[in-house]
Length: 126
Image 1 (cartoon, rainbow, N blue to C red):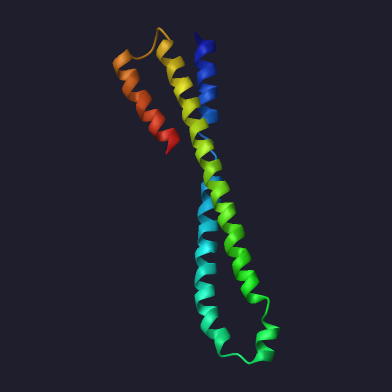
Image 2 (image 1 turned 180 degrees about the vertical axis):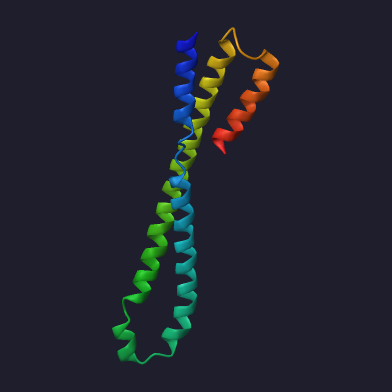
């Protein structure tokens, strides 16, 4: 019995280190995309009042704004997909641990184990 509890305790401890960096990187990338859009909106009227020499000197700005918007859009999509996969993996692991706990013949009753199991699942996956 102690071995089962020790194994479950170790699994639960490993679940608390959920990886949330993917979602953070995705939202940071969304911020860069929004900034690129605002930069483009601000750059268009500024470029229209430039002389041809100034436009030639600043020819790199439009490609940089467009490249940043496209690249960070792709990064955001990939990071959101990775965050979803990470969350699904965590939920699967939590469900597995909770089912192992429910199969144990000792501890709380099945009713209280179920409610505390749902609380544990909410805490670990949010």
